[in-house]
Amino acid sequence: PVSPAPAPAAPPSGPFAELYSLAPQARSLWDYLRGDGWSVAQAQHHDKPGSRSSRSFSLTNSRHPEMRVRVAHVPSQAPGTPAISIVDLAMDNLTGKTPDEYRKLRQWDFGKIKGKYEDIGDFFDEALKPLRVEIRQKCQSLAQRYAAVIKGFLGQAAPGQPQLGDKAMSLINKKVSPRFEGVQHTLSEKPLVILNLVDFLYIRVYFLSR
Image (cartoon, rainbow, N blue to C red; front, side):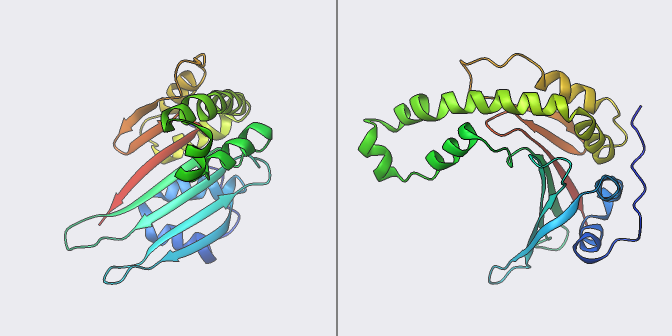
């Protein structure tokens, strides 16, 4: 069974109150994150001419420093179309020699890649792929340590599907093969929940609202 969300200490305020307003259908998830000690570290508007402003948020927790929750909200752009809120539980705050080297390589432009590798495919196979395999292994170990966080997140993101946490951990715990850079799995369709095992592990949930 899914553990109930920890009770938040007080009514939401500031950016957290905005999250409740933007995606009320995710209320149990917001309650869980607040009760577990997550706070909004960053909130941004993304304005585009002629369209309603989208919003993004980054949540952090001092007890889980390698992880963060990323939220992107895209408002309805036409009558009858839903607003979309995308919520990720991501391990992209992972630090160390391998993650840092990988991030630097991902910043290389095409000219720099061509200056060191004959083909861009060689860059991906020889430079990025080995690092991605190492990062997957590090994320696997981290997920095992933070299994309760993953299960709590999924349990409140999709409270009608208490099996999702165990399903996610079973897929995460599979032996990492150096032949593959990673895969994605659909854990649920309503709501849509994606488990990403390419480089930095993340779990993504899509919430639709009118």
